[in-house]
Image (cartoon, rainbow, N blue to C red; front, side, top):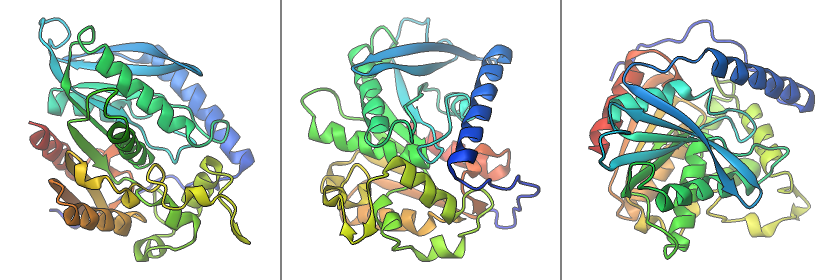
Length: 320
């Protein structure tokens, strides 16, 4: 692994508060609309937008078909991708580049999900949207040219947390559909409870002022996602303690996981969170790969650099 990579001239992270969050979301909305207007499908990738009906409304989904996978009459492997953004921001458009690269490298059909965001839609809205889309992919796999028995799920950061939450739902409701074939996690948050309880890891304190994610920003975003988790006179919402949908590392069903690949970085507040999750997977006999990149910050998979290319290559090999 290359260990001397440096990130230069990254924009400063704005403070997360009610006013700034509204501005961030407004700016993202303008960006998303502009991106749709000027987007040109990359060579070799067919892109289609659709909406999945759910009990609470329509969930936007973007499908990426590499090569001739949409029109060759065969069913193909797929991956449901869940974007990051701390449960309060991020979108299909902001992670369009990652999904395009994932489709190119893996040859899989990629389904990117535009789940609902907090603070308007708090937990468990996002995870329910993601599970609804996964169920839709399974149920309509033939029309979408997808192999029902080989749909992997994955995501970046908060999206990795949601992917693990969907895995938990699938295991608990295994009579309703096919279980995911693999988990593809990129610096996932696996222990929300510890953050909200202020039981910080060493890496969270060491990288509290990270270039792409600070501890303060992460904590505030989680407060928007789970506003009723308080730590003053005890816990006001004790049912959230040990909740595997929020803190997958505490799940009792990890031993039933399919194969897992996890990409992480050492200059990330989530470094120790990811290392701990790898330890728990090993203790539960899960078949997994954990690749930690040196001197890389949180969300480095969005950068154009050698490490990112290496990571996409590892994911493609893993999913073969």
